[in-house]
Image (cartoon, rainbow over all chains, first blue to last red; front, side):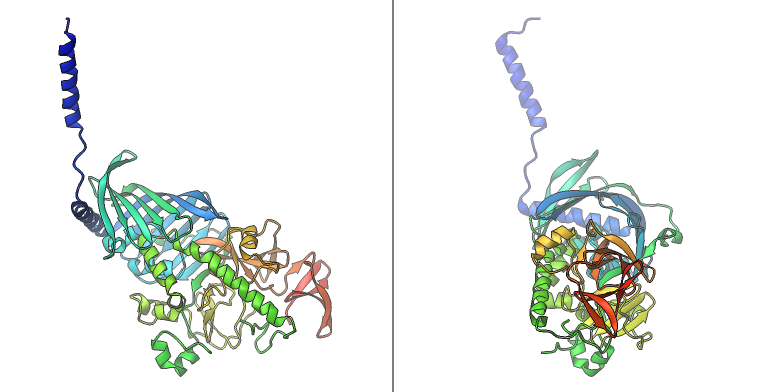
Length: 274
Length: 253
């Protein structure tokens, strides 16, 4: 069938217009609308996560580290099991680790299969306190910790945090809402499954550290009803592993000094010698 | 720090070189702390980063751990309870053990369920067989962050003297060998002894004073022969060795 050229031109133009109209990008949100949308998604994620009493997930981590002035990326994968209010366990493998850990509401026990050593230290009795303690006391960095608090929203957000919803992106085969925020020491992004509103991925940029390294964690294999028992969270130290010390910050003072200077104790410790 | 003792009640003899050595040591510690402080600001969660940087900017508060445990922090009471129940007020009369780390003058040792933590006038510095190694109250005196390697430390420290006690490495020097004292493994290289510790969730190697009884095959450089308590020994920096059949054994006077 012969189609005159000018007719063909109209047809092609019409198809382009129709197709273009169907795939036209949505109008960008105003900053206020993006902030509100992000906030709503964050709160929903927080509610959904904190409602889970027991869950497991896999976290694939890409962490930028600065070694001898050069930035390089380290990979690791961690399988985590959490049981509220006061237990978690994990196994971790990667470029520089082959480890396991258990928190049972009383202790943290860490095992290094690579070095064939283990260590144990006391811990507070709830997960929220334990997550703070593990950082302040043992200097253990847990980039996913925000998601494990009883209120992930409060762990992430401060009154000075700015940002909101950005767009939707594919993380693997999942469509995820992409949120981005800024605050004093870190910028962070969170991708939330657009269906379940559970985390697909988090990225944290450490602005105060040299060369501003970033850590990106992609989550998968989420199970909201795993089968666990008390034994799941009981430490299992392989035979023959040597116990070593665990570094922690000083948390006690000489009782004799405390008794001599009770006012100094309540203000934060004995007055240093001059 | 400058009254470091080998045993309670005894001091290092002050020589003409003492003050310059002290100043050099202080410089090393300042360099160590400064160089490594940035490491603490990456890798944690958003909340952890917020808390870490808030503390680091107010260095006294970050290192004044009694504040953390004295009702100025939401976790204070529970932390105090945790520590009191497991570390303090149990068998206070145990004498300081010089097996590892370095004791402070007049420090008592509290032995708890999880091992020993020494407490002193300025806070806890760890001495012990098992359990905890504490970070000093006023900063990275015992340990702070860690260097990736001995070579990395050398570049950062930029000093000609040996690696300081308390320095931590991600891995021991390439030339190190394993030595044993009282059933505990240490790494040894070039006059320095390293014990494995968990720091920041990772196995690290912390420089400690020479463990009594360790035997090495070859003395490090710079040793001099001297007589201590009627015994001929080799003095290598602050460590004394006596000749034994299989090499040189660390002795503590």
